[in-house]
Amino acid sequence: MKETDDKMNHTGQGHRHNLQAIARQAMLARGLLPDFSPAVGRELSGLTRAAATPTPSIRDLRRLLWCSIDNDDSRDLDQLTVAEPLGGGAVKILVAVADVDALVRKGSATDAHAQHNTTSVYTAAEIFPMLPLPLSTDLTSLNEDEERLAIVIEMVVNQDGSLGSSDIYRAWVVSHAKLAYHSVAAWLDGKGLAPARVTTVAGLDEQLRIQDRVAQTLRTVRHVHGALSLETIEPRAVFEDDILTDLRVEGKNRAQELIEDLMITANRVTARYLETRGLPSLRRILRSPDRWQRIVELAAHLQTRLPPEPDAVALEAFLSIRRQADPVRFPDLSLTVVKLIGRGEYVVEDPDNQTSPGHFGLAVQGYTHSTAPNRRFPDLLTQRLLKAALAEHQVPYSLEELSALAQHCTEQEDHASKVERRVRKSAAALLLESKIGQHFDGIVTGASKKGTWVRIVHPAAEGKVAQGFEGLDVGDRVRVELIDTNVEQGFIDFARV
Image (cartoon, rainbow, N blue to C red; front, side):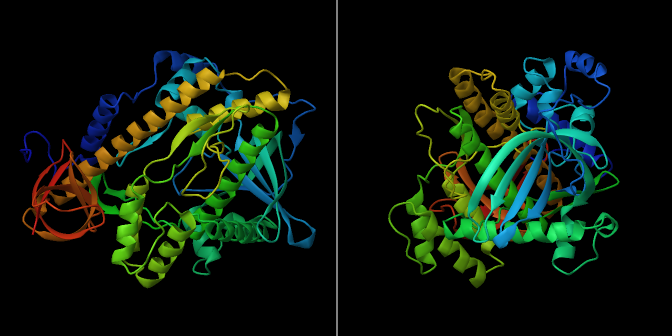
């Protein structure tokens, strides 16, 4: 199975280039478009500046201390946040979401590409953006010191973490600081200096501390109601001069949790807003796990009894105990639970027939995706529904169209995840190909008729148990020997020791 050096120079220069070629092939194999069409290019040539349509209905909120917090290298900035303390410990949180629809019109060539892929695809070697970079990183991005149109989600969070009043409207905004997760988290944890803009923009430091405090309260309340404390492992490719040197695992930090909790709440408010106005919505759901009995068995092995029927509160209590008891192995347990719970999906909530289930992992009932329209098509769909509600216009999609798009978005998201995983496996195979014969400790992450899969810790890699897989099931710990790799195919084969 191992490739010869004349097919791919794995040890010389060009790792990134080789992985990019693999990524493009994987995109095409999954029916995803790696490139934009000439028609999209022609549309872009006619766009030279951000949307500007001042009307009395659009509020001017440029004076507020808006800021973004995202990955260190992110340039497609979808949301800004700001907080306003109220009486009695309540805080008004405002989330400004980039008005992507203002430039990406329904039915355009750009919209057609976004609707086809439905998501940006983040591979180890290259990002395939859902929207062209001149849009997603410039004209529709909430960039620092740039005036932009936005959809603002306003919500009052009471001192006990409950949601009070809320509203949604259009507004002008300006970001006063482009901040990064790592530096903000280090500062909030007292392990690093404040980012430059936090020290130079008056009042921004207090803004962030208020938002952090509200986010932690929201998180605590959600977990009490059964939101799951899971740590998924997402290794990041590390390159030095285009040579792959590592797949580094980075845990979620405090700043990421801050944004995550505020966005979850904003998405709940968005779903409620559309529901109260009798409009359909695209809901994000996670059904109760079919393999709950296997989760029960895993808990029993760890001296914990779970109820016979799916119970998010009980599962979260179990996860919290295991995180404290064995933090080193907790990511392995999390990965197992994630595999057994299954993937999320999109469904349409019909205002006349409200039957969609909630989100088992987040422990929320009404939940949509609305805060990342530069990166996800469901969020752009939701934005169009919101703007129709605000303008009291006809809904731009029929229920039949929304249902078809919901299924399509679910399928394409799955394809995108498989592309990302495929390239990650090729990168891991590249790092492991010099380690044939070495032994590793691993955890079984998949077991079906298609095969049995195991994950090892360093480098963070997943491969197939080609020999000795009999009797293994998800969550089992196993010692394996690396017996073969294939970088081009992304194959990593282990034998049970």
